[in-house]
Structures are given as structure tokens and as C-alpha cells.
Length: 340
Image (cartoon, rainbow, N blue to C red; front, top):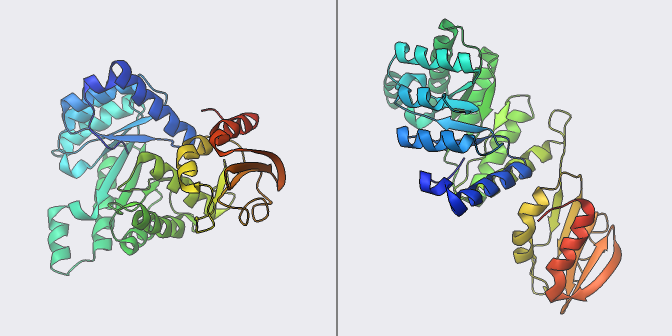
């Protein structure tokens, strides 16, 4: 999800070019949809305009005002995310569904544990209903509205900050409906905590066939959200979620370090994750963790003293001065089809 509100000045001139370039980089890294919060009409105009500037499918995330959804549907928006229960009644929902159907635009029903319908919220507070059951009942209500209007381009998300609630709610709804599910843990936290929580929830669901689209929510960069999602999918190692792109092996660094693996990996991670090739890349910090321990890597780099070594499948190719590491690595990746 895009992290900041955009104004027209942000998508004009050099700033606009930078945003378009960043969105293209996210797409190259494997991001399939990019969601934007659309809190008002001004935001709708901006996101709608941006949708015509990029090839990445953009999703408009709308609450409370059905007219914002209607306006977004005048633009090449790929999907609308809304909660029909908070946009003003079935007559207003009907207008959105009619226009979305005419445009062929799908809608995601988005439900969060923190924003349940009031009656369900009260039952949860009074311990008469579990949060899991409340989420599922809320989803079933919204799906019923869509069925009433014969709108079938719909998927559902039920997210909670609790990993166990997220897993249980999606399992329960999957047993009760065949609606496609968008899965993830909302408000999952900063990088480390968020990756751990998302990994447990997403792997638990995807490995049992539950989930059609995913989002990794992190209090971190969009790039790290995409990387985390890719790595979670890669751990499944199944026909349903095939392995694509690179696998990065990098040492954690220690007192033997003579090459800053952290800084090097950070500089190159966007380029590496944009490689559409099944490569294993090794970034090692010393002679111990160099070609020996990463012998199976397709491409690798390690440092010893003021020198850097480049290797392929354990075979040393070049030894160069450390100051030339990035340029030499760029040349090496160029042979593998990378762009930077």
C-alpha cells in the first residue's frame, strides 16, 4: 500500500516522474496491485490521474462516502476496496455496484477486527461472540448484499492484528463460502515483528489452499512489504505458488567482517529482486563465508581486506579493489539481465 497522501503537485514534473519510476520498480519486484487510501474527492482526482500514468493496477481504498467510489470509477482504476456497511445504505451500495459492473471493475470487501458493525462490536465486548465469528458474520452480511445485486466480481478480506484471529476467521469463512479471499495481518507492526506475524498467518493459510491475493502490512517501506511477501510465497515451494526470481543469501556480519554486506545488500536489493531469473545470489563478508559456504550460488561477492572477490558457483572470477565493487557487480549482473 502507498504510504503517503498524494497531491497534484506530487504527480507533476520531476516529482511525478520519480513516483512513476518508483511504482515501476515495485512492479518489477513483483508487486501486482498497489492500493491507495482515497479519503476525499481531491484524492480521487489525484489517484485517478495517476492510474492513467502507470501500468501498475491501482486500487482505490474508500470508506464512508459512496460518491468517492463513483468518481474513482470514472478513471482506469483496477479495483475498489470498500466496506458496504459504512457507505450509507443499500441504495448507495447499489449505485457503486452498478457502475463497477458496467466498468468491469472488481470490488474487495474489506473488514477489520477494529471496525466491526456496531451490533457485532457490542456482542464481542460483552463476550457473547468471538471476534473471529464476528468477522465472519460481518463478511457474510456484505456478501449477501452483493448477491442481492447479482454482483460477482468480489473478493473478501478479514484482517486482524491478532495472527490467530486472522487465521481462524479466514478458515471459517473458507468453509462457508467459495468467495475469493484476500489475506494478511493488519497493523502487523515494524519490520521484524511484522514479517514474523505475516509469515505465520500467510503460510498457515496458503499452505492449506486458502487465499487468492495477499498483502504484507509493515510499518516499513513498500519495497520491504513486497520483498517479505515474495519470500513468504517462496517458502511454500509448491506448484500453487511457484518459485520465481532470485534468492539472496547474505551473511549476518561479525568480527571477521572486511566487507559491509549490510550496506551492499541494501543498495542492491531492489535491483536483485527485480531480476526475473531463478538465481541464487550470495553476498558474503569474509573469506570464511565466501565462495566456500556459498559454493552453490549462481553469483556471489565477498570481501577480504581491501579486496573484493566475484564468483560464480564457487569459482573465483575476479579480484578487485573494494572501491570498484559496485561497478564490477553491475557488469556481472548485466550478463544476467539486470538493469539499474
